[in-house]
Length: 312
Ligand SMILES: [Mg+2]
Image (cartoon, rainbow, N blue to C red):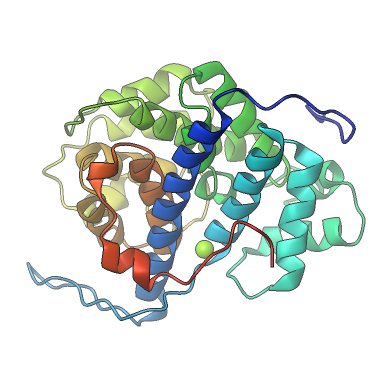
């Protein structure tokens, strides 16, 4: 059931601009992570072997579906101040039509093509995977800026994150993955001081629907931060199955390990291998929602392909 309708309009919140600037900060973190992660997947960047820093290429680093879909979420927030699902579906479909080569998954191709052909998003999202809907990590990969926007309201984060995912992810766990990432971004945005620790994961678990991602996230509490990312990725899932439950727990573990250091958190995410662009988009989007001192390296921001909030 749509939680919004095309005709519904609501006033923007009084602190809209402040919320939007948090969302934009998170979008920068998400898009730099996405594009850097993609350099590793494409082979342009080389993994560091035993203590050697990875080699990363000069820009421009191309962003992928994670960033392109996150842009539509931020545009929807900018315009409506909430997840107006029809606007969001149209935004996703328009971006898809303008460039289908951004690394969309198989299910996403089917859904976005169907929406482009005029199928209502609710039907298109339900059709895939034998009518079960997608439990993929696509709802999670794009949602961190939404958590930053609604940072001070946990209940609202849950409602809006679910609405953002529902447009393409009819499966409940696809939605849970998005809720988890948005809760993490909202939590980080509210902290003035951060140390590594499991509090972030505990906060997310306390509010998360009890689907597969919840069960897997419980396991993350048992993985010490001294564990090598590759081993943690093996235990928690590194996104190679491209499901929410195979992706989000490892990403939140990386954030909890390095909540104060954007670059270190991304190196951990990259060290887990798997769906690297998406893992880095999730980790980067969450960390950048918080303390600006956590710092996206300026040279990385410079290397990322230029993105525009206004549609070209
Ligand atoms: Mg991608």
